[in-house]
Image (cartoon, rainbow, N blue to C red; front, side, top):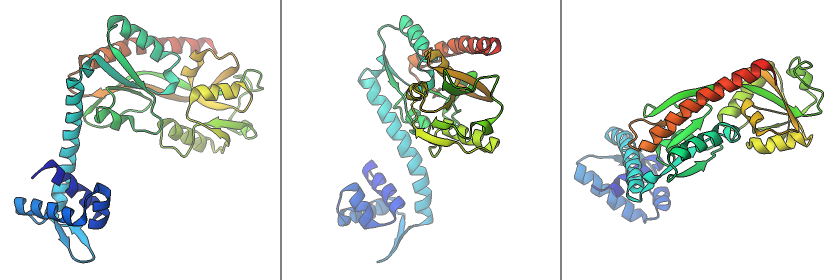
Length: 304
């Protein structure tokens, strides 16, 4: 029994079609049949029930598919981590982050971390719809900063701070803290928003806000990049809703108006990770998170 045979079995278990499976894994149908037959003979287990028209898993096949898929995923993750160690990648750390922290938390974190570890290379990734949790579990990143908590049992998450969500308008706009009453007063405004059809945390939060308010925004422009949204709002192309952290971009052409909703910033990493750099990033993040949280609370209490 080989890993290659197990991979072929798992693809066939998903496709339940020999021809489609052989096309997907780039081997002939007869070769695929021989691999599966050899696997069944070695295990002394019938994995599939098949006739001229149909292929389906046996009960034993269903059991092995479930267990082997988990084991193969773990094997590939371990292999990826071993290659990183072999290539000296423990001298590098990969961080994933939401764009909203790129003007405040992230630069300060990098400054503090590189002062302690000046020889370490840092790779930064800003995923959009990609799953941070999957990237973390697959060892493509080492630490993920996120707006939502990761619930996988192999991931550790800690809250760094919470902050308000804000309506963002051009500097000369009629709307301010005093004139804002409710979302219905914004029904004629053009909105520049993250695509509400996306599966990202912030898109989901926006849908919740609008549903709670019974409000349907005129979505004029869609983009997931907050820095671009700030520039477009400053140019008078519409208004938006963003986390308070974007105020640290010091963009003079926009005004921030807080609403009742808040968002969190969390740090996430793999449990039992042997990379000492991960724990040091987490340590710096917790210290800085407390400082940033206190700074935000002070600013929001004294006014925007």
